[in-house]
Amino acid sequence: MKERLRNNRMPPLVEFDIPEEHRDGPTGKEVPMLADWVAAGAKNDDNFKNNILPLFTGEDAWGEGTGACTDCHFDNSEDSYHEMDLTSYEGIMKGGDVLSQPPGVPLFGQSAIGATDYDWSHSKMKGRLRNNRMPPGVEFDITEENRMGPIVAHGVFGDM
Image (cartoon, rainbow, N blue to C red; front, side):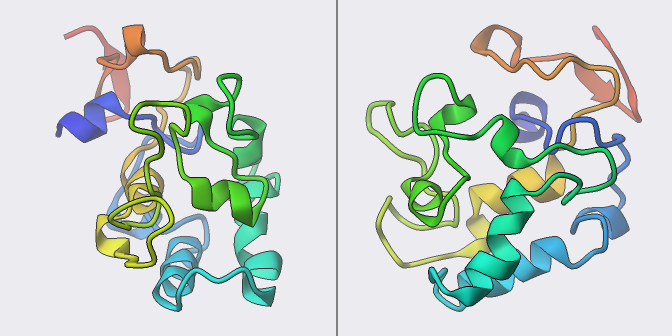
């Protein structure tokens, strides 16, 4: 519950309606495709270049009218949300919060950045894509000060 309330709701501008049939992406194939790629060793191969990377770099990849993930996650710097770079294989493998101490949060359930013991069932990426959707009308500006709200209940938001 804490993770759902505190963490980013991804992708922005997607209606907050997440029954099971909506949790795997707009066609229902996006999140399973990522899971299969991770299970196969998360390699920098043609599958990554042709199918996985476009999920992060493409406009409308997560539904009509959604921007690319890379609009917000474009560099391993303080200017990029969660200091995360989803523009390349190398950036993705560095994880999030790369400037924090200790640095790096693995995205695919690994025990540490650089480890290859992938565990999609405990993946931060899976949790963000399947469980956390920004409600409509809420400005996408997640800072430490506003991470505790607004509280979302059945698509309606406000202070509770």
